[in-house]
Length: 327
Image 1 (cartoon, rainbow, N blue to C red):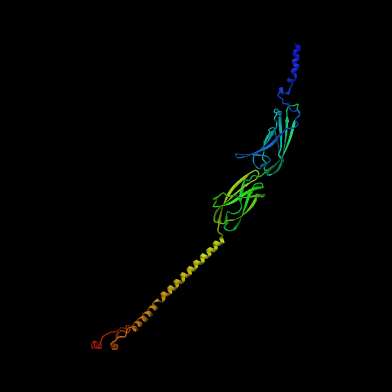
Image 2: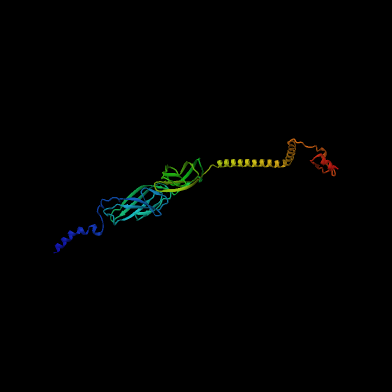
């Protein structure tokens, strides 16, 4: 009986001493020399989440995460430690596979992550070092029109546009008269290798125009619009005003001449009327038809009672009647 019990215990001893009984996964552990996994980046801005690979945006909360590759769950009970070197002089350590960090300035950085895993106190620690080159870019946050918003019609105007972001950037722009387009219109696409772009455009109509601009780089995009007022050339307006002033002066001079001539005519009117009456009387006298007019020279009397009053008295009649009046 005792022999049977001893034999059973001996047969079961390898199973009792197996690491799996104590919850230790050792499948492949003896062949495991490093830790497999990959790095990923998540950036959140407002309600938008971006999954990044190697290009990050500055001043945006960033989560760097290490994803362990362990399909056999060999390291499910291991204790991990992480050392994050962001390549700009800052180093963070912790036991979590993720860390929150954001770069404050754009540039190219080399991120190094050292991962350590300790399965138990007797096992050899496992390590893994991961290196990734990260490009940090400034997101496009503003598109500013540096030129004035008032331009002249029928002239080649230059507009300076500043795009706040890390180049290279794709910039698409277009002008819309009255800020509307009857038909779908495309835009002028330009690759911008700096932050300032000069647009040359000739406005052919007066009124309000809209400048639509959209810009994007590898990590961001932005679209905006500006209202532009187009007017005539001020020199043309000045010339028009001068011409109008000359016309007004000519009209005033004409009115002044007419008024002066009219006044002069009124001053000369009485003399002209007297002479014309006299002429008219003499003409009446001369144009009378010849008739047998009696001699009335003796019948004309002049009263001289008052020297200042001289009244000619003409009486027409026969000589006999005149004689009777004399007697």
